[in-house]
Amino acid sequence: MSVAIARKRGKRDPQGSLAFWLLLPAGVVVFGVIIYPIVRTFIVSFFRVNSALATDTPFVGLHNYLSVLQNAMFWQSMGRTLYFTVVSTALELVFGMVVAGLLNARLRARWLFRAIIVIPWAVPTIVNAAMWKGIFNAQYGALNAALTQLGIIQQYHSWLGTPWSAMNAIIVADVWKTTPLVAFFLLAGLTTIPGELYEAAMIDRASWARIFRSIVLPLLVPSISIVLVLRTVEAFKVFDIVYAMTRGGPANGTQTIAFFAYSTAFSDQNFGVGSALSYLIVIVILALTFTYLRLLRRSEMSLL
Amino acid sequence: MSTRTRRRNSALIHLLALVVSLCVLLPFVYTVLASVTPQRVLISTPLRWIPDHLDWSRYDQIFRGGAESVGATFRAAMVNSLIVAVGTVFISLLVGVLGAYAFARLRFRLRRFLLIFFLVTYMLPQIAMLVPLYLMLNSVGLLDSKTGLIIVDCALVVPFVLWILSNYFTSIPEELEEAALIDGTNRVGALFRVVLPAARPGLIAGMIFAFLLAWDEFMFALIFTSSDNAKTLPVAISEFAGRYTTDFGLVAAGGVLAALPPIVVAVIFQRFIVSGMASGAVKG
Image (cartoon, rainbow over all chains, first blue to last red; front, side, top):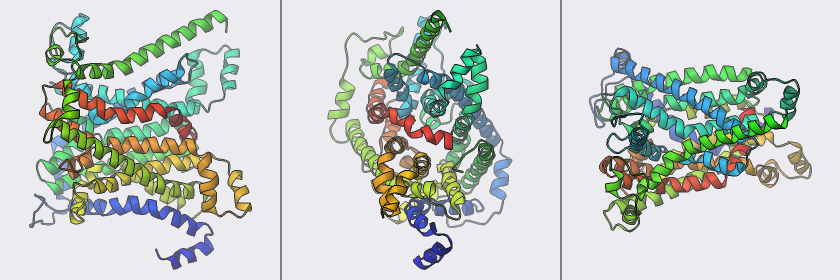
């Protein structure tokens, strides 16, 4: 936008011109990078592109989308992604609530507890994945060693060896890393609840369950909504931890939708279908996000 | 509440905190221990948890291995990760502060729309941008370069920084700036002289988030880098976890070293994480 237009806009909109200049750098940094790729991926999703250097790329209309929607692998990976998203987000919310409560409680050595809690969040995803891959290892893993020595299992298990348990192993790793972040978001909400509310409730001899249900939960709705949006979206896009722990295996049992898109585009060199897949992910995520945003607006989001 | 129930509750809370701390620490402590346990002890059944002597050979390999060794790759990746993360933090905080101030304080048309537009980009999966970005970077000669990675990482980090900072700025009383504005300072002057000093917790929280996001970024680095010139730690670790599948000790040692910088940053600044978000979480 030229300066002249900005000025003209400024007359009707006194702070508009300043806002324009302040937002310009962020706009360039973000949209300068992503606009072209987003548009191009969209276009490519309507063509057949079978290699990175393909010259013969016929227009196929909605064919890529239809072939994806008719592919059983797509629905299976969608199902796995939903399972991962729902279970990991639910566990992170529940554990996050407990940890947030503890972070907010009168603890001796509170600083130490806080310093310990922050650690998993800081561990990089790939390191986290490598760590849990070691713990779940079938030959020497710590989990096998601990469970055998405690007499809970008789023989070493191959935790990452079957689809179902491998998926749950990934969820464990993700919950370990992400619960602290969820707890910090919830704690930020908890600290705004005035102490008098608890005192009043205690004078009324309200039970802990009652206090949680009638005071804490309603006042935490904004924080919980934000955590839900962030976690659902992140979980739905999950790739890194799957790549590093199982590469989608065994027998594609941990292949999530983002991983499916990745392997379609890069292993099968099927860029048209890979692009269509990416856009299906985008559509699902946007649908989720806008549903959440509507809920959020009802819960007094001042900024949005 | 009687003193006795209060004491009992307090004991329960401390017990729970202890259990939670152990759940958090044990996996990581095992990894640290594995990195200094001799290979033959590490794969023994039944596992001896505490090794009879400490084996520092993996760290030696990482710190002193010559050219073409795991160590050389790892050291290069550590430097690359530091440069990419610091560069990303610097740029995204700079442009984030300016943009966040506009969102928090100025009234202009399309404000809501623009804010949502920025935030929605955070929702986009990286996979949807991978191939075109690869071609873009290739055409400007920024493939396998730290500069290229900083540019694409900033696009991921800036929306998040904008969100954290604009929330924090909104929580600072407007009267502070009004005084400065009456004294003849312009808006930008007021931002730097009045708002930023008052927004320190928010800035530090933004910095931590930006640093951890950039340090953690994997998919772009995986596709856009190919040599020690720009390969970051997550890519290097993922590679040697794939290559040395039987040597968990070496992977653990690399992992511990790669986790150290973000852990140090997060532990030192942890009190700002919550105070920086405190208003953010409430006001969205």
